[in-house]
Image 1 (cartoon, rainbow, N blue to C red):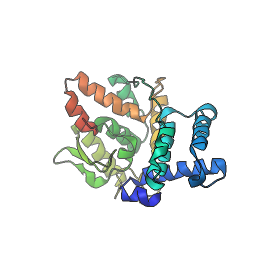
Image 2: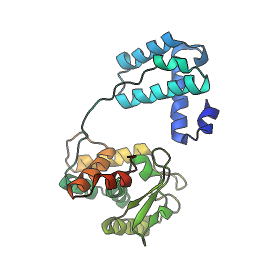
Image 3: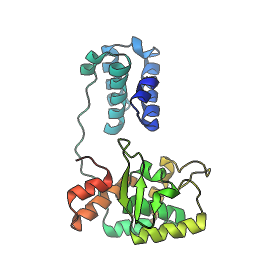
Image 4: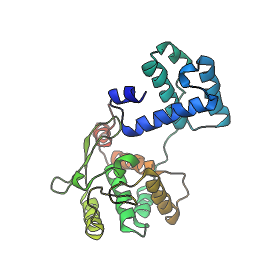
Length: 244
């Protein structure tokens, strides 16, 4: 399965998750997954829904991993009909007002946290994209940020505002990051997604915001605020790395 994922150039993160999900499936039945059949898959899906009560996104990821394993690794595409995709819940994302965003971006006591959250919002980045930014991705002359291998393993260039650039310059002078713009506990590793999650929620708590929001809410708010300012939808999609 690892070789098949690598042949198709799946990202390292997706490979790690897919292998983990299929391993968990096998461990659930204490049996090699190539020996499990359609009825086992059905029972496992019901276990995930009824007992684990997984969120749609988590459950869908497991379904994708199982479908890949049986169709691509074992060449049993006929089993795909027994591994249906779940219907996606249609929920509108919670949008933060401009004032709420301003409070979140200013309350963190540490400059690194402020710079990180401002970068996510001002460039409309996903959490993983912000984590893997390098110092060399910031182009102050062109006022752009290069995002490498975003969702779908696509590169894109996003705008950079003068306010963000000024904040990043202050942060760089203070911290002097070498490779990763936002390093983790060790300088040679980027900040983790969990650490970004904690930085965001600490800021939300300090800002006194009670909405159930996540770092991704900054990205949704970025798009909404651009739309409200008159930016056309296609431009917003390009900036956010969303296919037409």
